Length: 413
Ligand SMILES: [Zn+2]
Image (tube, rainbow, N blue to C red; front, side):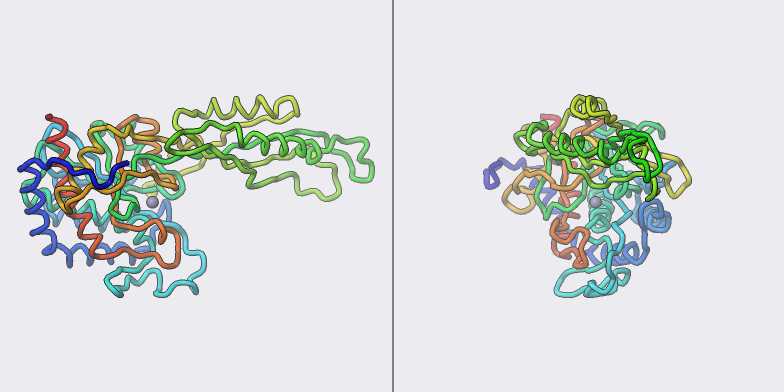
């Protein structure tokens, strides 16, 4: 999409951008201190409690309204009181450390070097949380909430089960449906409007056990799985495809059977990672696979994923995370592009993510217009070079402070 288009910037938006650019630097030290504090807290999925508490404290001291924890344990705070409801979302859990020896700085000791802040979860997604907390705070401080009420969500459970905590918030917590969701995941200050979805599928085939010394009395399930694996592999070129997101893929990632070396195996189960285009459902995926493996004795199901929040709630649900794509001409994209153009003189590219996000729920399930913008860079996500550029972090604060003005202008025509 055009990235250098000259957009007409309304006066009100230019003024908002000037105010935000002038005022943001004064918040930089406090923001870095808060971000460093949450990086010091190891918050694997389901263990986000301490970072949620720290975030609630930051919202309270930052003048947010209605600061509270969702029942599934997300940190929530609100600014503004306009008719349009914007949800700013980023998650507080992070990927696990694979090999600490690879890290240039200790992962839990935030370190500033060459204008970058290094630390575990900085790029995914704690710098995103710091961007939306401080962006909303700046909007309130400068009276730039315009026609919007902005809820900031420091989300939980995203790494293992993206979208699950947001689903619980919207479907079980009596949370008012937002008009738009902004995801502060890594985009390097450009815009993202979707990504492929993903799901897990298990294909099981049954045989008949027998002593391994008399295999002719049994029916070997591992051997029955062999043509099923070939059939699954042969499906890939025919999977649904999307012009912007590309084709679906599927790959066998695990295979299991009974741990009985002296018996003919009575069952065999293959696990498949499937990548999805928008519109696919658990039913459509299993029907498609069953139509191929059914005649070979295989049965496909989408398994249930066990998920427990740090507050002790069982959020388990199907391991299915829909793909999504926001229309290129959606007003939310126009608001995002106008915000960047007002701040920095040009609108950034609008692309898609390779990885999956909480948009699987907001856009993929709930059909709420959803857009991504964050200061972090995808290349550092889930790596030992986990970091955020501090100049970009401050720009994201400006973006989130000015977006409500642009959104209000676009929506009210
Ligand atoms: Zn993330």
